[in-house]
Structure formats: structure tokens, C-alpha cells
Length: 223
Figure 1 (cartoon, rainbow, N blue to C red):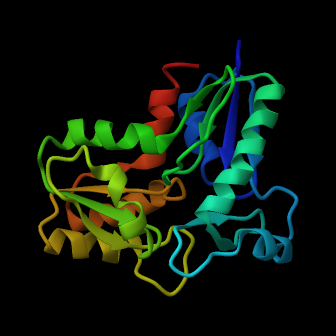
Figure 2 (cartoon, helix red, strand yellow; figure 1 turned 90 degrees about the horizontal axis):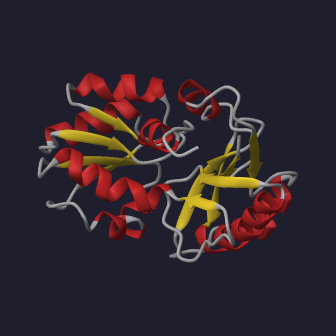
């Protein structure tokens, strides 16, 4: 049986995401979990991946449970080296545990599964012209990640709510806001959103697509 590699932009293993994968993957499937920020202290992360004003950013989770906002371009460069490592360790399929848009990630022979390539056309086919409301973790990502949703027939509505806590809106608040603005179906656009967040968002009375659950089910078909 071939080996599955997963790469989070934070630190591995992701105790919030791996149970969702475990629910749909064959228990016998060998897995190797890696993270872009593995082994780094918060000070080292701040030096090497600090977000820059006006530049696209990502948010992720560290092993201690805290969240960190990092520069997307620097993260992508570091992720490429981690992909090479996973491929060298024999991973035939590598799943990115991030729904953010990356420009240039590549593998030599391994199948690279990038959620931002899969979610837009899949969600577009599911919603079929209904008004989609997208919950992103950071308000800054509404502009930087908007381009990937071109396959949708209608421009989506957006709201921000971090899956990692903080002072911003909760998932339920963001969902109610989107419902009030006319959303008919909701998408939680971050791998950090889990079933607890979906339950909260469903309080708005709309169907809720959970990105990591959808991706996990699709990947289970090819490994």
C-alpha cells in the first residue's frame, strides 16, 4: 500500500485535522505528517515568516495550540522543500493541509493534492448557481484569496472568523451575517475549521460545506 504524506503550513501533527482524515482513510494506509514550521520556536517563526504589510498572509496552528499569521510567499518557498522531503521518504500522494492559494508548488513523481485546485470547481458544481457565502479565517484573505473562486457562477459573499479563536467573530456569528446578506449555502474555507465549527455555522439554518471533510473524502478515493 502506498504512503500518504500530509503537509500543514504550521506544525505537525495537526490534532484537529488528522481525525477527519482517519474517519475516511483505510487504517492500514501508511502516513507521514509534516509541517512547514516543524521544530521552529515562535521567535524563529517571526523572523523567518513574518507577515508583511499589504502582502498575502495565511493563518495556521502550532503544536502548543496557538495560532500564528505568516507570509504566504515565504511559506510557499519553505513548503516546496518539505514536499521534496516527503517525496524522498516514499510518499506517493501528498495532501496539502491548507486551502490557501499557492502559485508554484511542484513534486517530481508524487501526486500533489492542493485543496485550492479542487475546492472551487467542486463547490461550483455542488452549489449550481446558489449564492455561496464563504467564511475565511482572516479578513485580509477576502481580497487575496478571491481569485480562486472564479469558477463560481455568482460572486460569493464573505465573512471572517478564525478557527483558532481570538477577538474576532465566531463561526456562528459569521454564518448568521452571511445568511442575513442572502447566502444560501456556506463554505468554511480553511482546513482548521472542524466539525464543531460546522455545527456552530449550521445555527444560521443553511447547509455548510466543511473544506477539510470534503477534501478528505475525495483523497480517500485515490490512495
